[in-house]
Length: 330
Ligand code: CP
Ligand code: NVA
Image 1 (cartoon, helix red, strand yellow):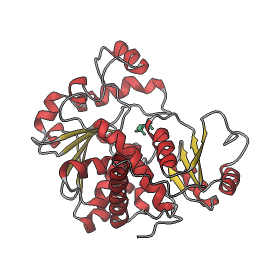
Image 2: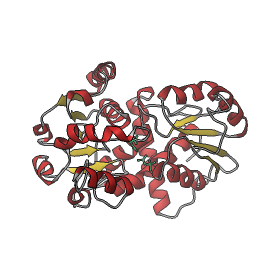
Image 3: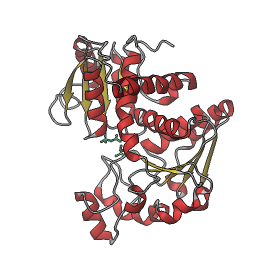
Image 4: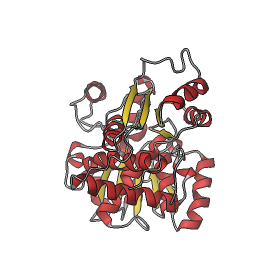
């Protein structure tokens, strides 16, 4: 498998075999890290990390992974560069590609990261856009693979806002890797029909299925129950009231988990609003009289939750993406 020179912009661009290869490489790199085996095979290389939105996991994953591989990193924060304000994406791509061996981009529209890649002669990696969050799905699938030993045939139920980056990317990932994807939400929160059609066409060749339901009974028999915040980065505060109204019936709580399969895991990309220990969680919780939003604290901290394993796996999978696309020999 040779992925050298490839961008990593969305899972739609990758075959099931390529995704499987990245997951296996991530597992190998994780084992090396746990064994204390150095793997700094990309010494002398440097990567640029552009973040137009904030981050904990993705930024730390790219930085630690790059350092483990022997590479230098430069972090460009949401306000401290010329990008977008004084310099176009096309110009930025050509400037950075002259200095760096790879570029990570987190920001708004998917078309921005696609444009960056078009003008960059070095690999560009999507660290989250409004539409897709492909490195997160690799971490989620590595976690599922570790837990169940396989991906194919698992029933994967996504609760809540399914038409944003997480719902879209998980649907694509499930289609590619042969899972049974169900999004459970009011119709207005289902992904765009064009993407659904594309995923169903992929699913026809992989044994996956793609389904939608407004009824939470769709969680029956689920192997994985996944949710994400109801209001994403970059969305205005004013949408909270409507989202809570629409999505509260789809909260992941003890009652819902009891309807899932007996061995089901709870997953979340994080950060999560499961208590009042964050500024937003507290403000919105008090304003709308809720202890938690998309997931209760009981489920979040309960025995079925694999959220911190997922978070750690962000680093191992992002390392695999960089290593593979930069042609590391491992
Ligand atoms: N899951 C995720 O992407 O987290 P961050 O926003 O902290 O990077
Ligand atoms: N949907 C969330 C995902 C965070 C990792 C957001 O875009 O804010």
